[in-house]
Amino acid sequence: MQLHSRVKPWSGEPRVLRVTTRPDVPRTDSVYLREGALLVMGGTPVGDVVVLPEALGYLTEGDVVRLVPQVGEVSVLYRRASPHNSVLLTERCNSRCLMCSQPPKGADDSYLVDVWLQAVRLMDPETAELGISGGEPALLGERLLELLRTCRQHLPKTALHLLSNGRLFNYLSFAREVSKVGCEDLMVGIPVYSDLSSRHAFVVQAQGAFDQTLRGIINLKRCGVRVELRVVLHRETVDRLPQLARFITRNLPFVDHVALMGLELMGFAKTNLDALWIEPNEYQPKLRAAVEELAQARLSVSIYNHQLCVLDRSLWPYARKSISDWKNDYVEECARCAERERCGGFFASAALRRPAHIKALQSEAGAA
Image 1 (cartoon, rainbow, N blue to C red):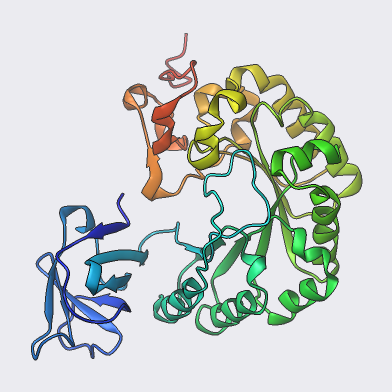
Image 2: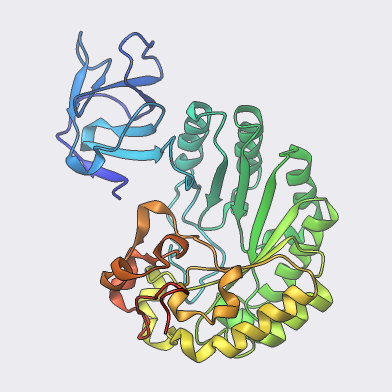
């Protein structure tokens, strides 16, 4: 699914607007959608007509878009009917993870906070969940807190999932400020890649990151903020996966969730693919041992971004359909698979390389 497109440029300033199909709705913060075109008030006495490409034909009532007239840019910021909405708050980061799917950039992109502050105010208050990611959102400091306060005010029922490397939460004062915002359903997802500080530092390409991350996790929990640990599985992390699980159960048993995640082959993961790739069947014993360790300690654990046919059947209860709908895909074998509806499928980027053992599964009744 396409979220950005270029159309014929027109005059005007960049605007964030809610899509409406009702011509009677005031258009100070709305854009009227009719027959595949947007009517944008302000350019002429009757408005500018923006003809949408077919790729954005899914736009409908309640969606939120950003229009940049001078370059003819239409960006879809929010889809009311989707459970997979997310906020890219910055592309700056203080780590350079080997498999980062959104490689950090040094440019000043502080304008993004203002864009999202406008967008959040236009989102449906009944939105179930909203992701907040980067880059590293914590680098924004007070501006991250401003976004969280805006979410609390305009999306009081919405679960917020903030992705962070956790390093800046080693400052207890910052963890306290996040807690004081008072978002009722906030979880911070933080990666821990090894039980060894040197291995974690190598994966994130930042010396001292292991200690900073652990202090950040402890500080957030101390302040009452829920924390999810995230482990991306590749050749540099799977070897000590059982030891990492034991480290978590002994030292971080208070975390709220552990997610064991497959690679998304974008960004640095694509660049470093030959060094990072490992066939899922090679690490099944270690993955199974890690899940058993975490489950026996009564920790909530999930497996993300894996196809059921590459997982040991004992791990199926932990597998989740985790890939966002706009980048989710299935392959030819999936069309014949009895478990397709339960399976999370692939990232669209998996076309670069996919597991060698993909196959169509039979139903248990039809299995040999």
